[in-house]
Length: 320
Image 1 (cartoon, rainbow, N blue to C red):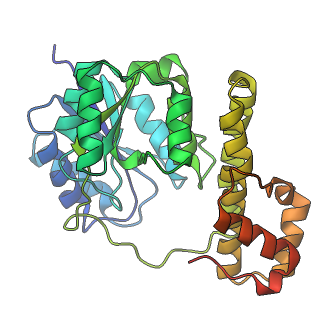
Image 2 (image 1 turned 90 degrees about the vertical axis):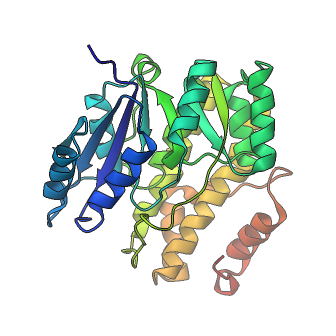
């Protein structure tokens, strides 16, 4: 019986022209590794499903296509996870492709038996990651990794991670499937807070310019952008319940992460044409204005944005 080492989950919608290229790109990276390819279609109205099925059949790949209906990406990812069978899972997004990370990540996963693997952004990070793995000093707690993320020391992109499938199912970690904004960051934080072993691969991440789907004009998201804030509030609840001894991380969330997320939502609404008073009224009714707390954990630029927004909103300038 052939054991599946890796499940590649690819959520797609209306990319019939790019579908075969994306699958070819991923298949080349996974060559030699027992891999299954799970394409989850989110209600395509073109020939995306047909192109995916044909490519998998013609290239004799292990895999299948699931038609998941016209729902959010988070729901598609949950469906892919439920149908997966690999030792590890990874997520591939047509709009954010990274080159040549699969083999390096898998080697790191095997060396460390990690629940969660992410990559390096540059040579310095790569060398440091290799030293940590060689010295078996990779068991930093997930709370420390989150602090490093909030302090811009570590960067983790859901488009380039490996997660042990058994770990996800044992800890019952899923995407919040009705959430369209912030679901990826929430999922990563949940994984970091539950993982016994987290490892940074020395593999340096590089975006692909050839196969990556170029973004068109994004549709307005409106007040749904504050789903991201709700996602971060759910993480804060976990911190206060299970990690209340880590006052530093809780303060970082309350004084930096949450106010930044709220202000980014404000910027989106203003860019989409909602008036200052309407935005302020919505924040007040929804209670998000109470999250605009500042302290020594808040950087100077964010403090300035919040101060101007509160005092003279008509002079507030959207952050580019």
